[in-house]
Image (cartoon, rainbow, N blue to C red; front, top):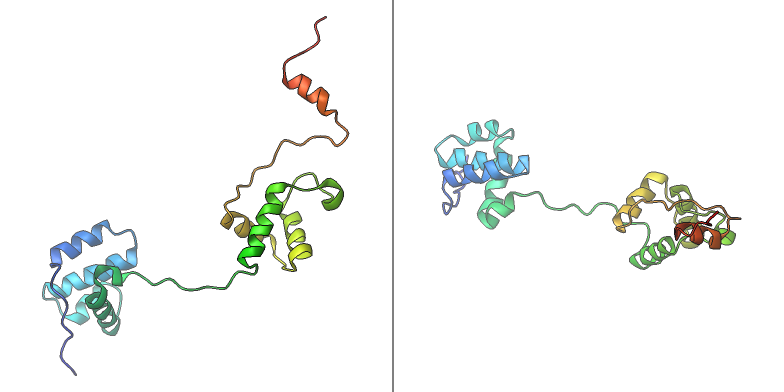
Length: 170
């Protein structure tokens, strides 16, 4: 068994504990507490067990802490699945949504998620389920608000007269 890996000492155990108390991410907080326990003289195995990890995992976090400080204890971003639409397609789709539906072409008076799924399939060749479309709409910074419905055979002039408060006097 080799010698224990040295931990950088520019931050004391008390400072690591203070940062652990103020840390929002519970995993980072546990890693900070494990490092603080080691700096206070606890065995590496006991410190790792108290933080809910094994000794080898604690060693990996010590290496990252030595290299990058407290920022090295944060989980790295994972790439995830790539989006189905390119950025250009997303911009065009957002423009379509903001422009609103055309009654003759789209057959609807206001967008619903089901309609947006159909539009994405027809215009961009990309199929989405409703839950995925909701995520896409949210990622495009669009809020889900519907306008007040209006009857297709309604009289816009009469509607404006009514809004203006110009009611006929008896």
